[in-house]
Image (tube, rainbow, N blue to C red; front, side):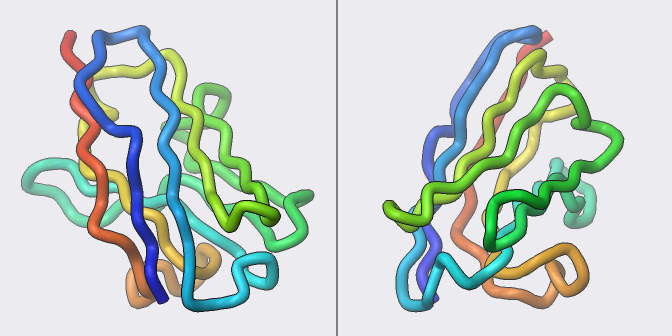
Length: 118
């Protein structure tokens, strides 16, 4: 399993970013996928999950209405569109193979840093 995140950076509060996660080493189209994040000094926080068939998505209350998870199974790529960013969204964002239930123990990438300046 290989997961490579990209798209992070420094953005002002209220701005937007789109994260990508390129997946390989497994049948991407068969696997639910998840985004998690870890803020400085804090534990891993679940952000959003998407089913293998794309039709099912779920979001943490803290990002609902601002973030959109999506996937392109033809490109083996997972996305997270983040809008109306807040300072509290500052974290390293990771994509995870699998759904919400076991995200803490599942394979994840090296992460991409998102920093939101207020």
